[in-house]
Length: 349
Image (cartoon, rainbow, N blue to C red; front, side):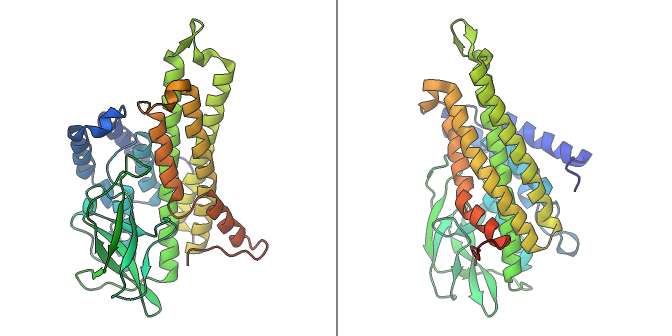
């Protein structure tokens, strides 16, 4: 694996960074600026980045998991308050099931269990699907699974209304409804390996978002340390603050490396190995993200505990990404199971 970005991937990162810098919220008050949010939504829709995982040649996606993760990371860095994770995961599910791409990707997300630990799986077509539609801003429907023979069929449930929840940048929706069959033909049943591969990709995107959220939190804390003065000097000159920021930076960089490996593995390795790489990355990134975001709050001192400081928005976003398909404890248990240590089994199925 070559961890260096190609010229095209670097250009993608720069384009995503420009979009974020131009339209993402610069303050907590900006989260209520509907005109700004509309501009961000228009820019993201125009970029076509929600369709990066639509099938192209031989059902391979238009872009790699590494490239999709690059976009996710930049959106996380800027606390972009438009949907990307949900629609991208829905697009990936459609591709793996051989279903036609959605005509409006921004209006579709995925339905996870109430604890966000995995996709909702109904026992039959008549069973009601109950769960949480994640990253559901503007979503009209969410994809779920229904058991069919020895596999899983892809179904859709309607989404009505959202609530902010813990993450103020990506509202979710609680859903309970009878599923509907997707229109069109040519769809195939998803296998357990398909679900495992999709789960690896999902964990990869959440890791990328965590890395971006960490980078944004470090930038926020570093900038504040340069302008906040005590005893006549910037607090960034205090050795204790420098150590805190240095540790946070190292944690973010380490998370970037393990996240990049998981993104590479998602398209390259067999589903089981890709999933193993993804849970290792999730365990590392989730633990680091909480520490980094809490450090950003600490560097801000008293103001870091106020509603007006963006630091808590970074922490809230990190906490949600941590829960999607398993937190630190769940991920570590899956690592132990993969290594066959102590006979532990803790899978998605």
